[in-house]
Length: 126
Image (cartoon, rainbow, N blue to C red; front, top):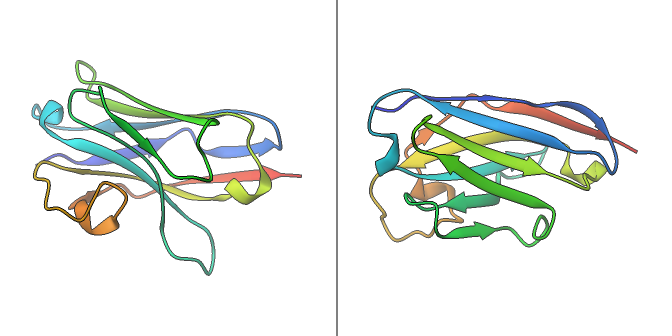
């Protein structure tokens, strides 16, 4: 069973950048598709980005397209989220998620992912 640990969150000014990392334990990381979600206070958890096992296919939420980039390094068992041109509305707890089996909910759905990290706080000041 893969376990996920996020890091890289923090406080940044609007227009700045952050790179989040998701470190996965276990030797089967390459068999998991990965996703990033975020949750702001009082709001539902929102899809940010997803990447398939090979890294060839990526998907993004409308609010982050063109600003965020998801990537993975299977040799390092890690997934990354490069966030550029950050806005105050990007402030949230960011979660890394993973699963091995595609159940048809879609990569944008929280229901598609069985494994979750503990989250890392990202705060963007105006």
